[in-house]
Image 1: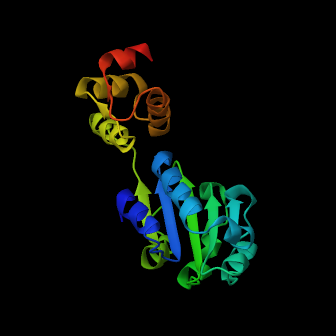
Image 2: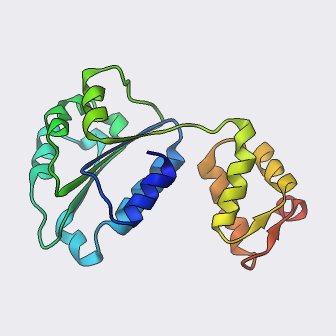
Length: 201
């Protein structure tokens, strides 16, 4: 599934039990994780049904036990394994991955590097999970990405201004988005980011 397809399915509440988000570009992984945090459970349901674990602290046995629990007063429980790349025993989750619990939405966020897709662990992931690889954008794609990001903020941007921002900030999308958000705060909806606006900022 693409980034857009995953976001759309989360907003439509069409969930799968297992998601693996991996790759070099952290921005898309963070974006998907935020959608899960905002759209799966309401505030009342989160108290009993929402768990965040960090890779370096994660224990495979307790994680699988948590994932096997049933939700309380909610159709789902949500478990997010953040920084899964720091979990040395990640492959020990394989028994759960082969038989995920349908009422648990288990999201693994494996940032800044890819999972080796040739291993038997990865074959289980491909078979049972929604696997999304977050790839770094090439330099020649960055201006187009900036244009669509600005549109999502209900603003316009001139092609030259998008090019300027791309050349100045490079391909670190979190950094680019952060700067664009700062510019957007001071502009009324529907206005355009021009070369001058970029230079002033």
